[in-house]
Image 1 (cartoon, rainbow, N blue to C red):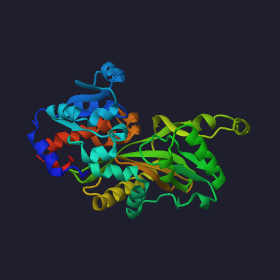
Image 2: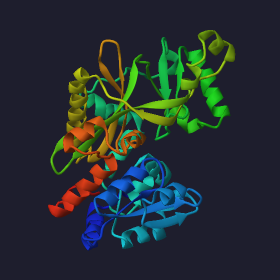
Image 3: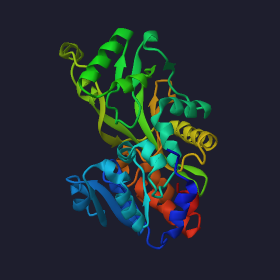
Image 4: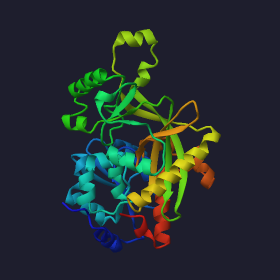
Length: 363
């Protein structure tokens, strides 16, 4: 099936009433601040929500319209798409939207205008593309091990797609790799197809910082919006146990993200953070035009040489943006008031309408 014709999306956008735009997304992941931010900027909001999952949106009162579906994946059904288009909807993508709608569907049948570059989402999901983008952009990343048989030190093993850390594991040998693969298979966390796409890289020892950026296509500028770190199960629970007991427990640690907390970098590291954002956005313009557009996240480790090493990226709003629904230390510096990523996204849409440049930031 061929990719969606950009002109078709632009044709749909041309028919929209720009005075009555609705901001819509799937009811999950980082949608709360997207809806709140959109409402703050004067837009209507619409949630596509699985039955039984609508409670937060009703209790917090952030949605004007509810499209209830049996399954999140139903967002790509034509009848749901039609409802979205009838509302003059622009969809804000996030991790759950990508996971449930499916990349193939987003690229080929989801005929609703989206904020950002829908083509770059695949570069996040496929490790070889992600690595190509970061390498060619000049961003420091961990070394890759191509074959499990070549493991001769501590490595991190990851699998394709937006998983929130599910299935990731650390191994120190080929034998340990094989044992943990079997364990993951037994828990139904991975399938045979996932093993073929396993990504093995050097384990960089350092502190984890997820750096959230916003690239404004209208201003051609990268903004540093916030930083978070993650609570991951079972690794965070395991490290609270004395070392002897950790060994006795015989638990294979997992890295499933269960929550996030806001952090700030020491100020002397901020030049590296901006350099990473600038490099990756410039690289993306050439490799997957028009490049990043709107929110993205670089997941990093900072070692004791104070080197910021990027190990993963999100090419859309990352879950850690939930840590600054009322603004971060960094987003406050730009605007002098609390600013969430969702509100910054809505501001870009608002500016695109005002400047008659909405087509430049929609795909």
